[in-house]
Image (cartoon, rainbow, N blue to C red; front, side):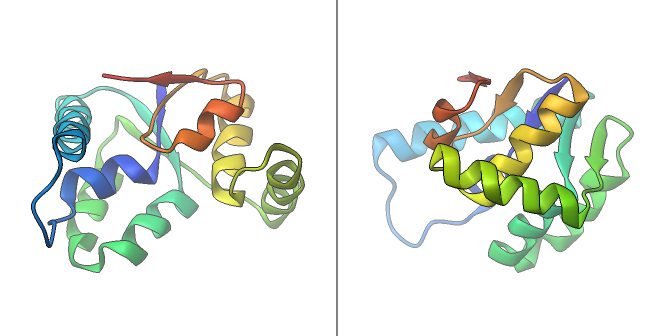
Length: 132
């Protein structure tokens, strides 16, 4: 199982307002590929916070998020206030966002080493960023 970060959903679904650079187009295609694999049954982990992050950016894809949540292969981890506080401390120590630190803590708790993400901050954490 791999963790799936909010950035994957955002890059895959967000409709650009300007022409994309070659690099941006590559990231968008890779993100779509990740979502295709998830749609085909690849097992992934995320948190309610990360789904909320996507919903805040992409309000028009709420239906897609509900569909993703309904899939048996998408494990959505509940988090507590204590988890979030621990994440805030770790975020300060590592120089990452609280949500990135939360993903890391949940991954560690669940024994997940790999993450689908386009967020470079994860390179500061002890995880394997999948670059597919």
